Image (cartoon, rainbow, N blue to C red; front, side):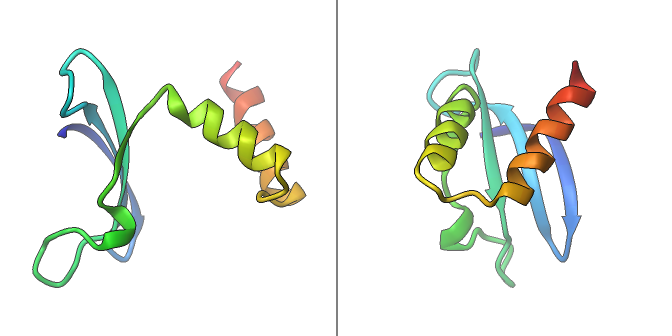
Length: 82
């Protein structure tokens, strides 16, 4: 992944956006938790296409994996973006 933007969430935890490793015309996202050696932890090694986020969120909600509070947070941010 060619990182173009990082969101620092503190404690080394970052959300990274950038050019996908499989196609530099596509955007991907990565949840990054660095290890003490600077590498990635297993929890954050995956890079996924940005367009998959919608599918992941919808299916997680439909299958009861996201709390109502978290759903409200997502909706609130979505409304702000409109």
